[in-house]
Image (cartoon, rainbow over all chains, first blue to last red; front, side, top):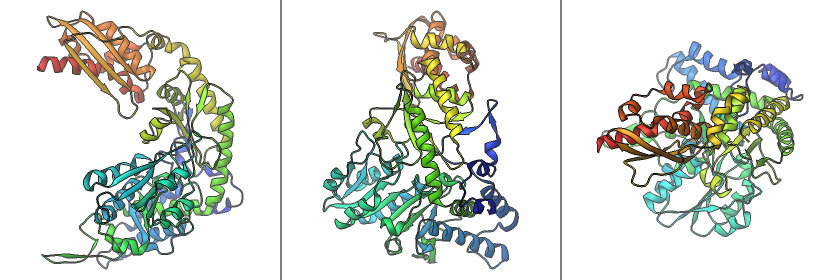
Length: 415
Length: 124
């Protein structure tokens, strides 16, 4: 972590790259160029070492027994909650529930809050920009209890239709669930303004922050959201990690999500009472090692400064947009100005996105091709499938240039 | 992989053979790959256990569409048994270019659909 700390003032991606062992690997004989960071990110030594250290030195189940290892792992696990809380400005670490991923965080709200509090004809407002993870759980509630699910539209430039949003918030709206940064277009949505509009109508607000927390400063108090779903593995933590922030009084009032060990206060043959926050929502043995390693990822990003990460990625994004725009046969979707994280979806005229990604792979370059788990948005923008490049703090302009050269090769072959 | 190695695939991608549908086909099957959206439909006309005619339709990447074009070109006159005993390598080696394992599912979609069409027919 010392190296990262030194980089707080001077952001040196070449130096940072040394922290990521996987970036030394070659693919098809070429150096790996990893531009699929919206799917998952690579892990620095600090995270890999934290995982290894936990299993080599501390491994024991938490909240059980009085032995030393159990005590240590409990402390480390709780500390990981504190780190996640600090990263997103949550005043109370007990308002952080660890989950497997952002999808599970949203499902937790749908099941533990939605099933109990929503009634037939209540409205949940989402947007057309959502990942499937913030669509399908609400469709489940629609089918089970007859809520209405409404969508805010997205303009060609990739911005949410905010006037439309205000019109769609009615007295029946109970929840507005909105993505902070789009995994397809990169659009950063004005979640603070949306939360304000929702609260005025008495609705709660859930922010899907899977693509924002890893890339820019996020503060739940400033946003004013009631829930925030985050991914651990998209911010250098291990896969299988994520978390949910909820206002403590809301979490207190909610039913549990999963039932069993560690989430109870007392169990008799007839009934059970629930443990305190956040354990009420963390049934069973959690991914202790993963959570502790996620804490190391939070340390890494905190030492760099989320604002510095955001500034550097914006530089990469500007460079990539410039290079891709040099070719009229590359169609970029939804970059009509406004704030973006480092995500670009595009198509190469006359070439199937899968073939573009295939040629890039032969050059050692990893990009995503497909529907990006956002089929309603893709359909609305008139692209069933697209190629997506997404950046992180260890990418360089040189890598983007290599990708552009490979895209030109794909155009030569297939176009 | 250099551009010229794609020549055979590109030829079939841009000039698909046996593209279309068969009225009154003896066997028809359609399947896609949900993660990438490629879809292939195959219609087969059989005569005494032998493929008399075959046509395909669908959309997708060059590898999936060219593979099914190449496949349909090679199976006329072959028996159902020949087709059902085809191995993945038989299809992959017919493409004129080494295919990266990440693209296997594209390249093998056509043969999978053809086998399912024939299996459904055999079962009925």
